[in-house]
Amino acid sequence: MFRSLISLLFCLLCLTVVGQERFSSWHAEIVPRADRSVDITETITVEAQGIAVKRGITRSLPQRTEQPISLMSVERDGQVEPHHTQTRDGLLTIFAGQQDVLLDPGRYTYRLTYRIENAIGQLDSLDELDVDLIGPDVSLRIDELTATVAVPPGAEAMQWACYTGVEGSTDRDCLDRRATGELKFSGRGTFGRGRSMSIAVGFQPGFFTAMAPAQAVQSVPPPPRSRWEREGSLFLLLLGAIGFGYYFYTTWRRHGVDPPAPHVGPTFEPPGGHSPAAIGVLASTFGAPDTACFTASLLRLATRGYLSIEPVEEGFIFTESYYRLRRNADGPSPEMLPSEQRVLMDKLFSRSGEVILKESYDSRLRKVVSAHHRALQERLRGTRSGESNWKLILPLAGIYGLTLVAAGFLTGTDSTGWAVPALIVFAIAGLLALPAYGYLIRKPSPQDVALNARIAAFRDYLSMGENQRKRLPNAPAMSPEHYEDLLPYAIALGIHTKWTAYFGDLLDTSHYRPAYYAGGQPFIAAEFGRSFTQVVHTSSTPVQSASSGGGGSVGGGSGGGGAGGW
Image (tube, rainbow, N blue to C red; front, side, top):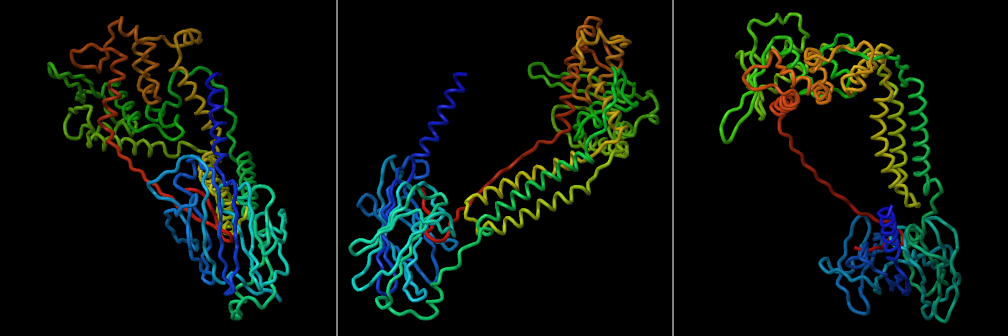
């Protein structure tokens, strides 16, 4: 309880620190020039905590062909600040600060001055100045956003307005007033993180130089985006998610729910007379490991008299342990064996009647394991008679693909700031849900369900403790022969340690020694089961390797551009 409280307080402290990193004030001084350019000086005060703002602030400005931008100066706290710029995807990004110099947490005031050419256009009967003070991509909160527009001597401002909100919004949650030689604007509330502010001033024609007709056409602002363009991506993702979930659930309920399993009592024998390797595969959802099935078949052949297993230990100070397998020349005929066990015998002893198994990888043994696996899969083909219902996944994949394409097409005009994260979440969730649906929609036949129930009951029997087993009616005697007969099945099911643990004392006190166990070493059931399966696994499994990598990218918006830290 105390640790949980400390963790909660730490998380709240982290959130508080993150929330404190912000732009406490942002003021833009806009000076129109007679050649229709404007000089803009932005005074930005940032409360840095070393989270986003580590070296300084960034400022992104849209770099348009008809309105080129030239950076004039960058200062911090009244001193010239080192900086560099980067142009990418139509944005000029200013990085204030140095790569190898980190700022101490505190308050810093930056002053950026730049010029925008051809910023004043012609609209109706006025010369129009439209300036986006900030765009939707400012990543930190702005507590106070203000601006002044100088009215040059000889110019006359006829009308002015300010607008706030997301792109295309006509809200006017701001104040504007006229002062001596300038117009003043201030926004209400906080800005940034998708909330922007724009100002517009209409001047009496005559002060600014005449502009070419082509320039006049270019200066006309584009029409505001419709609500569908601004929010359509999120709407499509929501609609696609609802349709995806509805189809997933309803079709699964109709076609994928398994038939009810019959009641099965204690099962003391392998269901259906299947071999150990077959039981291992049928009991596993995604197939039992190759080596476990191979080891089970190998031990099954030994208990039936086809081969012997001899543990060998060589050396005095540095000992080496391994197992020697010998084919019994006078063993039973392999004709009646399951196909995977016949393949195992043929491949394993193809060169000689003796094979050495060491705790090191053996490529030849790996080929034998693979041949055994292929023969087992071939024999079990058609054992399951359920319905795959694979065609039902096609409409679901269609809903997923169409939603991604349609929503992705509209992310470029999104103004909410949530379209891209929502698109990523939908894409990842769909990639996880499609395989899950393919598995869940498969419907086993009643015969398959009954077989699974018997295998589960058989597994429960092999895993039981002594007290549970004593309460079973008609349970077979716990003899060494019974242990030996079902040990291969316990190995295939991955529960041989439980099966051996129950018989451990009985086998050790009776000095039990299997007929297939050769050599002079004593037989210790728990030790043999562990070491033999480990040796087979190691000698038939190649060493694996892995690699990894990654990358990332950054972007911006239009209008007043973005800002943040680096």
